[in-house]
Length: 425
Ligand SMILES: Cc1ncc(COP(=O)(O)O)c(C=O)c1O
Image (cartoon, rainbow, N blue to C red; front, side):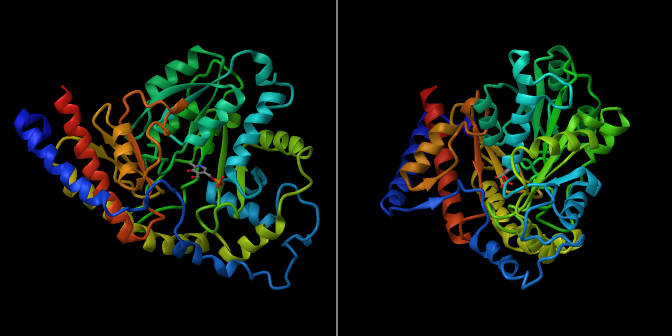
């Protein structure tokens, strides 16, 4: 029976039953965690072979000794690998350090202090600066905006990407809007992949700011759960180029969830003008990144085919976890009308929407029974989910048995919070 069809006595009786079950779990002093969007130990084990792979070979394909300074833009084979991953050419790629988030931060920072291209006015000298932030989204993108005092304008995520009617009407009208954050494939946290129409509209839309940039964080472009059912994403750089907006997009990715988070390699790809300007400024930041890691990654992963084969091994570990989450949500909540959720084909997260006003309460109930979830609101700019309904589920890290128990408890807490809401009127 759907919750809105229940009478008050029915709700009260059900609420008591749920509470009893909840108290029995409380007595178990559980310690479960579904907040960590990181690979499990079994996944990390897939890449240990990389740690000794250099085995005395330190010379990159162009003859550079990777142990020494040089090649700020990265070794050629790493640039080629990321060019294939991001759908561009090696000349348009710079390999960074261990974190794509770090490159995104630096890219915003360079635009703030130096402008996006030679001769363009630094954002910081243009008064108030704003970014469009599709939400729910990745909290650390929002943290970067907060750090630089960039005002965030929330737009809704729809089932095929950001609400482009909202985005277009915002960016055409306001020259202070300088950027948009996008996780275009298996987005964090919804697992949504942008449709061709959304990508084309982003690439072609009119912007009041001539120095507007799309921050295309393709963190999950390799992270399919089923090799026979992969989402497809249009190449935004190609479309930008066709539309005469070649400089509009910066693309980012990393091997954080391919090999080792925090110990992988990252990349930025963009137009030749953007890359040249970026490289010029990078030269003030560092002499060169860690090329030993770049070479180890290239030897271990070899090429895009090697990467895909490696990612299939991750999928074998991850898919049963995503399937378990989907099946428990469906079994426990499908008929009640008190939640909806996404069923992503890849990435690291599942997004759960409770009834309006219930997410914080669910997270709190979970915490009190020993289940840690990402804080409610974290997926929105300024940590404020206007409908207080979004909860990010991260199934990758806990072992399957723990994940199943945590999910059952989460569903119990969703039911409890929903009953409380209805009883409160
Ligand atoms: C969308 C997104 N971008 C970037 C990152 C971090 O990437 P990196 O480890 O390369 O900094 C994450 C990590 O969760 C993420 O979800």
